[in-house]
Length: 358
Ligand SMILES: Nc1nc2c(ncn2[C@@H]2O[C@H](COP(=O)(O)OP(=O)(O)OP(=O)(O)O)[C@@H](O)[C@H]2O)c(=O)[nH]1
Image (cartoon, rainbow, N blue to C red):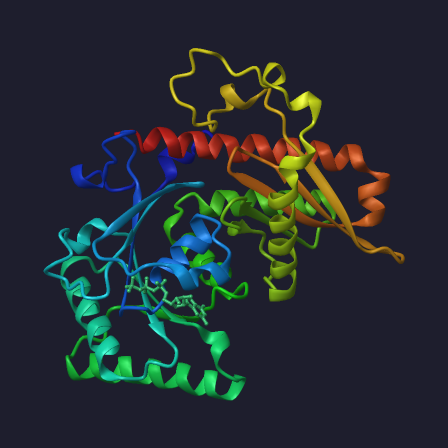
């Protein structure tokens, strides 16, 4: 694993302006754009501030760019922009950003949002052709299934037509149907995140090894607070399993703090007092850390499946489906595999962390 640093093909850009002045860490920047009331702030708040979806109704209009720093497997900076922003008024070149998420209300088939998206795609194709452009066709739950598919298709078609008119077809972009009221937003944002995490193949390898050694048909490495999955093993993701893991994590996030173990007391943590940063990623600082775990039986009838949860770093958690026979009969082996997996992930995070220091 120590070879990771030298094999990473794309080290993060180190422009002066992409370095957070407070911590000196290079953050990966994500631009959140779209018309007024399309749902940008709701997306940011639901994912990164645990705002309950119903409360997004009370969010106020964004008047200026709001930058939100968020630490997960990589440090992120999400720029929530006002609806009227243009390439010229953004105040930063597009070359600073790694991803652009454009939010369109699924009922908004008018020309304005599409022209604006096309304006940004054209600017990106000149300034930053590597930019990942992702279109969230949002508030999808508002429409019936047939209308949803039809509007989704029409929006894609219109964007393509506009880009053809402007003779700018080479820039890749993706569409996702999203809503804050279900797991579609988490799934779509996770897919965007995967494109930004350069250590993804290493994390996937670790998950594949864990699954093979634990007879697990599916495992995810989740960012615990946002419930975005950072990586998964090679088997296909089915939405039902993903949603189940999201729900379990949500329940643990809500009730976990009520069940603080006496062994998780400050003394047990044994973090060196002189540790320069509160970031708990370095393996030396985390060796003695308390790592909660939990499990729930999904269908108890034989052979049965158990959903397991293990905290891996301060931010990341492993959720895996494991045959109940393995969970009950070979618990020691499972825990050994988790420890091996944890050490691997912590090493990857430590290398990432060092690489991003300004
Ligand atoms: N039905 C539905 N409503 C949503 C969804 N996401 C956001 N909304 C609602 O859309 C409205 C506008 O949301 P905001 O997040 O303030 O939109 P914005 O794009 O940040 O708006 P500005 O700050 O004016 O640019 C709010 O009333 C939200 O409750 C969604 O997925 N489904």
